[in-house]
Amino acid sequence: MRLKTSTRCMGILAALLAPVLLVSCSGGGLFGKAAPTPAPVTIRLGLLPFVSNTVVQIGIDEGFFAEQGLIVEKTIFKSLSEVFPALASGQIDVATPGSIPALFNLMASGVRVKMVMSLTQHVEAPCSYVALLARKEDVDSGKYADLASWKDARFMSVIGLTGTEAYFLSEALESVGLTIDDLQMEQGPREVHAEALRAGQVDIIFELEPWVTRAQSEGDISVLAPLEPYAPGLQGSTIVYGAKLLDDTDAGTRFAVAYLKAARQYAQGATPRNVEIAAAFSGQDAEFIKKLCWSYVPTDGSLNVPSLMAYQQWMYERGDIDRVMKEDEFIDVRFAKEAVRILDGKDE
Image 1 (tube, rainbow, N blue to C red):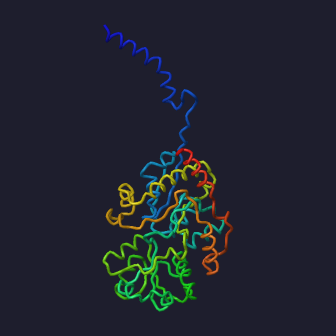
Image 2: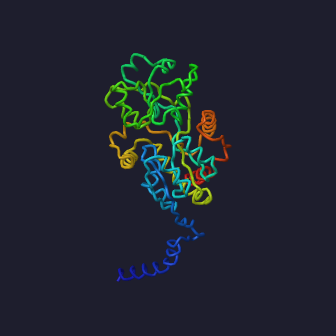
Image 3: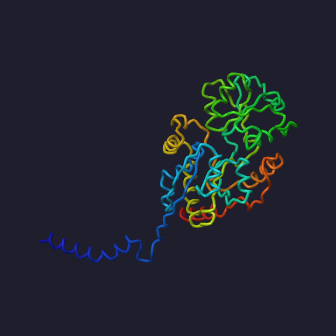
């Protein structure tokens, strides 16, 4: 009899609570409506499979973009020469390009594309993400320790005497009264750099991770000079928005929130989960990924504007870009600032 009474009371209680539960589960609450779920928006994202772009992949794999109601359609490109036309035509809405002259010329042409958040910044750290490498015996003997001796060396880089690679060298050589035009520079894909160095075809190679670590794997090549000290904080790559997100402040901000959540996870470094994502995204072995120098990505998305303005002026003086833009012509910090405000508010 006690059991029947208890069951009956529980049934009455459930009936009384049902309307409350229904309101709660349907998005309302006892003291007002809950925040509505963001309307779904499709974002077309263009990426190159670089380890540094792992931060964006973290946002996809960890569901940070999905949390913001964003459906990310990812396209993997082989080169930036494919990315820029797609961005200019609206085939993709977001990209993660390096700071090369072609990007500045695209933005200066009037196409609605702007830098909105930082990806990689080249800051001084215990390890070097961007460096000059040489044969170990030359490094150990100090053959090229004096920067003035670089004019007698044969260099190899991917893009030659242009872009951030040349800018680093230019800043370094200025201290000894040389310019990059004094260098013997050959161009070649990164895949051949180390072998060209071992074969004696060149003397110094310019590398970014993961090629800095890969070139040293056999022990016969060493870092000659980390390059971060010569252009501290140089903005190496950025998140750029096309017209769709520049015009849609809500969707652009939601993307920024998700991206910065991913940046905060990426900043933890080679955690098991980050390594897993980076290995799958880049196609590299997980053990190799653990050895890399992880790039610096600001967790607030802030761009190093002074570095961009100085670099832009240098490119113009070199004849690499068509004109010098004002800051507001190619940079838009609204989205990062609002995303930080939202995230900091949630964290409190």
